[in-house]
Image 1: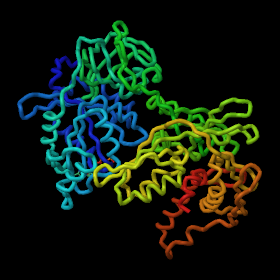
Image 2 (image 1 turned 30 degrees about the horizontal axis):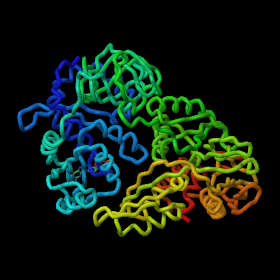
Image 3 (image 1 turned 60 degrees about the horizontal axis):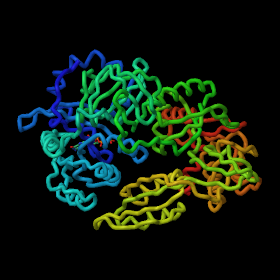
Image 4 (image 1 turned 180 degrees about the vertical axis):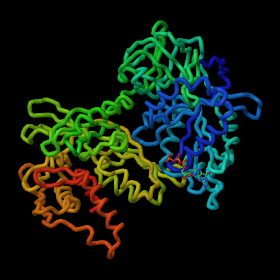
Length: 605
Ligand SMILES: Nc1nc2c(ncn2[C@@H]2O[C@H](COP(=O)(O)OP(=O)(O)OP(=O)(O)O)[C@@H](O)[C@H]2O)c(=O)[nH]1
């Protein structure tokens, strides 16, 4: 057990924020290398416990804090906690919780590409959390690097003083020591009274099958020791602490964590639900009067059906979901039965990206072949008997005659965009039923737009469209603002006269006709020709609004090949086989995965 006493004034807690590909991971690795001498010294203590935990944690081990020691030019040894943050709008709340555990952040900007949209929201989150920001211009080894221009951009777009930005190349190892010196000198040490009742903020949480729930925490005030009885203030759960420790980067048990320290706590509770991210841990015997600000119980906003391609895999899918939820308590799932797709689950996610990540993890880590249905938001349906239903699945929508009204979730979207791209972005927002509530300049190079928009319109490929109309320069974040009445209808799709429940979507009446036509057209493109003709119809209620036909005839893909190139032929056949895996027999027609997501692509014409 590590028993060093920690001088609070020598602690520095920080995150790295960056646009994707600007070099965050490379810089983090260099920082680990640079401080390695000390972690070697501690390795003996850490190794015994580390492996199991790391194996269990798998991919997510990255998303936590690493404790490092660094001897600075002033001759003092500093304790650095590098806290990782997810980088996407869906996880804003988690990013904010992680940043709330830091006093500073390194802002990595590619010195050739300059400031890009994606990081802006995160920088603002960091500024909201009063963090000291250390700009680092990375990739100065590139011939196209232009640090002076990028400094100006940082000042104009973000409004940060970049005169003392560190020039670095994480790849060539330039500027790493300077970055660490800047962290030590510019980022303030944590405040917090060690004598006060314990308050610790939980910023990550997962379930370890051998040890139970593990929380990553930052101590704000007071001290935490093994054997203490602790209480999670939002859920009221209580438990005795069995172990506390730090990651360096493998787990090292310690006998005490004091103000400003970051580490893990293991207590004897079995439910991740009782120890959620965002909660405050206090001393059960001497509780703090108030929890730390900002606890929010995050609720899923986007839902989709997930079905095994082969119905025999249902149990495996359930086990996989059980495991994933232990690690990510924000996912919800309930068994769902579809006439078309059989048994599966209706799953809820924080946003679209979150949904995509989980789908990918299910397929990659658990080796499952899945069919997923188009994402949907939750509608609040008031029935003619005055009942309120929360409808997460279009096929659960009651028949029209029983519906008094449908209310749909609205968001307030904030979009940052350079003036030259503002026109198309406004066009896109209005096309998606947005109402402008603000438009203002932030410096000469950036406009901030605020739009009230139906969430369902964001679910339909809004991110992709925003990216393309702004050439990648728009950044976007949103918050839910409540439900509003909408003129919504259910659009059904029929394949050879049979309605396919998993293809139903809820859309605004004004768009229903157009969406129905486009959807039938898209389906025609993605459904492979069969041995017989396939009729595709879109309908609202009993009224058919569009019809397309997939002609009979199976395509012979090898006909496209050059002469006798066998290896190329084989590749194509293998590709076709791969594609086949994600097919679902619906009635006597084989539908590919793309058919279920076709509604997301209707705007592409
Ligand atoms: N030339 C050059 N390339 C670099 C430098 N730092 C990182 N790269 C390269 O840039 C690419 C992205 O680097 P990452 O460290 O993965 O970037 P990231 O921001 O962590 O990206 P994500 O993990 O996708 O968010 C990689 O190909 C790196 O090798 C640098 O200083 N110079």
